[in-house]
Structure formats: structure tokens, C-alpha cells
Image 1 (spheres, helix red, strand yellow):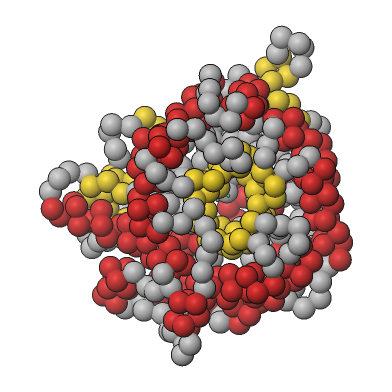
Image 2: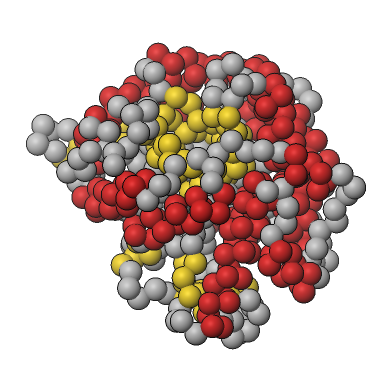
Length: 468
Ligand code: BGP
């Protein structure tokens, strides 16, 4: 079995991580622009990031040279609506039209994330997602996007990694900036508001456009540390709390019962207004987009406080329900994330079995401290064989998942170009295209093709039949 002929090979970025121009051209600030996480890891210059705002023509032409069929990027909410609602920034609209023109010129399909962590600061100042009125703000924003771009975009993603914004609210700007009595209850209330907002926006999309729309969580299948029934239950808890809570609500329009019972025992059931559950029920995603970096392994919770490092792929634990442990059968990348290509096949099968909706992988990739060297032709490059190995192994497993019967219609690894990491600075790089800047030194921001650029170009040109 081969990849389908119209398979969407591409790669991903997000606005706040690559655009720059954070305070220019009428853009309002977002929570990520003022995030202390960037200051802590040394990247103080989100005003520049990868300067994609000014260099998208060059970047898109490099993507075209790689043979991209699709480019997944996010629109910055506060570039369109500087205050989150109300006045539209025409310069922002014009900018994304120019990006779409460029993609159209190269026959690259835009796959657009509406909201990738960067809530407008103006909304955060009013309580962000804790405030129910943010549901209306998101719907208003969506309606602006659909009316301006509805005839140009065929694939929309609602919210990037909603599950990570709840589980790691502290790193992703979701944790309330104001004092709240019960931080966890507040996060699950925010989650409910996002779920309702997402459902309304999916409905609106179908009403206003002919496009397709889907959620975009970060999914990791969960392995039990041993076959002990307590560990099996812990794995089932972790899956429900980390994955299915979000996808069951998006696809089936209901709360997952195991996740609900967890919220009940923890006293964090959200306030659900009359009509909310009907809204969830009536929305129908057309596909599931998801980000996959690795799976996770858990054991029964010992109820001890957790000292492990925590981020999107490591150290997730819920005292009383599950506790994550390292999987010693797997290698790790230099940031400690486990590398699990077979788990990718497993994860695709699991999502397919559960929801039977077409799937697109919107992130997958290897973060590394790439070193720029002078290539044969005297042009700087990066010999990133480690990234090629990672991607090759994952694409191979995705092909096997397709053979297993999974309906996968696209693959957009992270990331098209180097960009600022969510919480580990500029030197943790993922791109096929090197961006010449460091944490502190902006250098000349020149673009250089890495070895993986040429490798991916060849994979795409052969539609994945050869991964050499
Ligand atoms: C995902 C986010 C991306 C990206 C990626 C890599 O969770 O959706 O925005 O940052 O992870 O993570 P990091 O940058 O932390 O290495």
C-alpha cells in the first residue's frame, strides 16, 4: 500500500513562534508575546522570531522547492483583532491574503490553525478563557476569518493542543493571571469554554463556508509500565484525562465518562450552562488533526509529589490516577523526549479505531541543537542525519498504519523553518530550513537548506515510495 496520490505532504509553523512583528502593523499583543517563559530561556526578541512576517515570500518559495503540497500555519488572532474583539486590523487581513496568494502561486494547500496558544492579551486581561465571554470572542474572530478567507482555505484547525493548554497552563499562558481559589478547577472551566467555543466555530464554518474543520490536540497513546492491573487502570486513566476528554467532546459531543469521574472526585466539574451540551452535540468535525511526538508510559499513582521535569511530552502525572515513568525500551532525544516511531503507528490506529474520522498529522519532529557547517558548495548547511532518521522512521510507521486501514490524508511535521521553541529557546531547532539567528544575536536571519531539506524533497517527489 502506498500513500494516496493527493496526500498532503508539508510542514507546520505557528504565528507567535516564527512571524515576529509582534507589535507592528497594527497587531495587538498576545499572551505569548509577554510570556516570561521566553525571557527565562533567553529569547527576548519575539519582535523578530524568525522574521517570517517579512520573509514569507522567500520561505514559501523554499517550501515550494521542497515540493510541499500543504503548509500548516496559524493566523495570529491579535493581528486580526488587536483587542480580541471589535475593530479589525485591515493590515493583518491584507498580510494573510498575501501569504495565501503566495501559496496559491505555488499550488500549496493552506491548512490554517485559528488559535495556536496566542490568546490576545486584551482578552486575557478580562480573565481569558476563565471568562465565558471569550466563547463569543472566539466565535466573532472565526466569523471574521471565514468571511475574509472562507473561499480561499479548505482546511481549518480550531485550537492547537487545547489539552496541553489545560495540562501545562503555566507554560502556555493559560493559567489564570489573577488569583483564583482553585487553579485546577479554573483550568477545567477554561477547558469547557474552549470546547463550547470550538463546537460553535465548527458549526459556523459549515454554515459560512464549504471548508472542512477539525480539532488539533496533542495525542500520545499510553502504555502501562507493567501488566499489573493497577498499571493498566492507570494507563486507562491517563488516556481518558489526556486524550479522550478532548476528542470525545469534539467528535461525540460529550464528556468522556472516566475523565468526568476524575473531575467529579477532584471537585473540578465545570459550570455548564443550559444548552452547552446541545452545542457540543451538534458540532461535527470533518477530520481529526493531531500532533504526535511520542507516547507515554505510566504506572499506578503512588500519590507522591512529582519532581520530574514537566513539558508536553514528559513527566505528566495526576496524583491518585497515574504517574508517568520513563520507557526504558526507547531512546531519547537530547531534550529527554522519547523517540517512538512504532508508537506512532499504534497511536494512529487508536485514534482511527475510536473515531473513524480522516486524520492529518499536524506536528511530529525532532528538536536538536543544530550546528551550521560549510557545505561542499561553500554554502552553510546542517548535516541533520538524526532528524532524517527520526522522520524516516515515523513516515515508515505512518505508511504501515495506512496499510492497517487508517485513513491518513496528510503529514505536516514540525517545523517548516526554524522557529522559537515553546519553552526552550531558539537553539532547539526543528526546521528543514535553518534560520541564521541565536538566542541573543539576531545575525542576518539568512535561510539555509539543511540536509533534511533535500531528503524530504526526494520523499515528497516519490510520494513516500522511497524514504532513502
Ligand atoms: C507543540 C506545539 C508547538 C511546538 C512543538 C515543539 O506542543 O504545538 O508550538 O512548540 O510542540 O515543542 P517545543 O517547542 O517545546 O520543543
